[in-house]
Length: 411
Image (cartoon, helix red, strand yellow):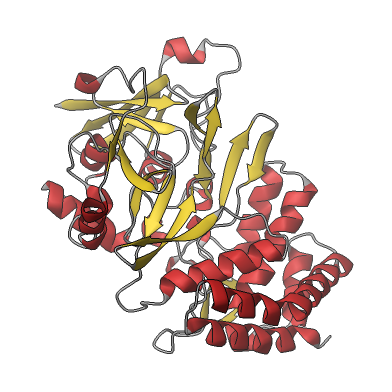
């Protein structure tokens, strides 16, 4: 028996995702293809072909769902097999990353004439957030059909003033809220510190803050793939690097056969991004090394499709893993064949840059610029944050950054 989900992009029906005996197929609508300037749903699903099967269909749609344990727990709560991409998207695919929405035929038409929310009292918000380990993404709540990629528990919702609200029946979500991780309780402040420091160094980041519910701190970030137009929220389309390169989320790490750093640089060139975005990507790789972020895999980088064309999306999910002694000090993507932070040198970064088509002068300039900024700002930045959002993790973060700066100061 063939099952169907209608696939929308920017609120326009572009095609259908079909499942027969678990095999997936995506077909563009003739009416959509006949529109002038019809854009592809994905870089890997071009409009030149009406029908797509196989790996690219699986990788694009699977990457819209949560990863690893979050997907398993969400599926268990919904009574669905974790490997059943179609069934999961049928339940939670109405508000995905980017401008994609998947809707069963019986729930058409998509969306509502007016935005629809259910405001949460502080007690309700506390309960929802506290229960995320058992009920990821608040799955199964009436009118909530929201998916969120990634391996960490989170609530994808809206912040209206200071009140959390669940968007209903296709209303776009606007914020992502993350509790502290059980094994790493200071993760809220760790990510906040690293994101704010990136911003202070001129790296384009998603906006973020600390939200407190019943006195408990949560990391909250504004979705960069949402914008306000004429008083209504509008989705912006995006794809992460796993989607763009055709990798399933189960192989997002290079050690598992996932994307490599040089593939990511080549992707930016294939997409014809401006040189400024290639330099921005280099700056992020340097910053990721300096903060000790061993979890910067390909899903933690995205492309945002804007009117002027594809651009590198703002940085997100920046945090240090090296502050946690129970985690190995390894990079998610190797630099010149090395993934141990202790073995990364300026010379290796220069060789990596050369293979990526960047001049030695450019890479040296960007390394020196970032080190100068951190030399000037780091201690003051940490001191100010201690006053506004105190946390014991800051000392370890600053110390680790100082250590890795020394590694790169030697030519």
